[in-house]
Figure (cartoon, rainbow, N blue to C red):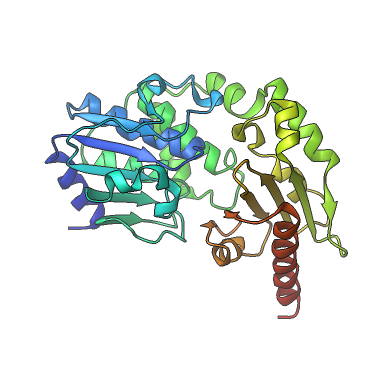
Length: 323
């Protein structure tokens, strides 16, 4: 029995399932959470969908998003927890103490996943966790209706950059085709997920673009945003989604970075690259992610964070040129 089949068997025997994902959720985490949660509910299982942080506005149109319990984990006699799109325990730190004694099913596609579950299915070859959920539902013989398909399509399309990142494979196109056949309406998804932006998002984008700086050789571009700038725009974390790509996509730039000053003395760092493996760099600072997209949190000042990360990235680029 393969591990995904083993997970399917375990879920079928569960009486009360908790499904959750990482802090500061993105499209893949919310789409996977809804895709699996709604499918299990429709198949007759008792399921609680939970997110520590609120569902970003751009994904609130998805059916079932109002069913996701936020902030405080309800007290219930869960017999297992499915943790999605989460590379390590720190990404669910606010609830880890409450769930660590449960049977943990860890489903993910990040190559830096630490396999912290009792049952782990980690496939770095999958374009998104949503792609794995499609496989799991097929394994469990649970039909996919329009609502489930739309959630999973959002998961896959966001993590592939609308099917333009290098993780876009023939296999994921076939999965996306099946989801479209299940009733996904692109005219409803595309504007909300990829095009429309709030005024606060445009405001913080303006601050970000004016803050772009470059390394001496121009191979690295970075953006440093202070808490003061976030407050000025009334911006939230979700308003920064995709902003780092403006730095990465500048001609001649190999790596784009974004530094966000948080209120608790922590700096959040996002890495995006064209060819070097930034997940290894993020891991050095206790973070992780994918080869071309990764992140970490640093407990230090903004200036120190910029200096440390920039020095490491520049050295990595230079080492690559010398080999």
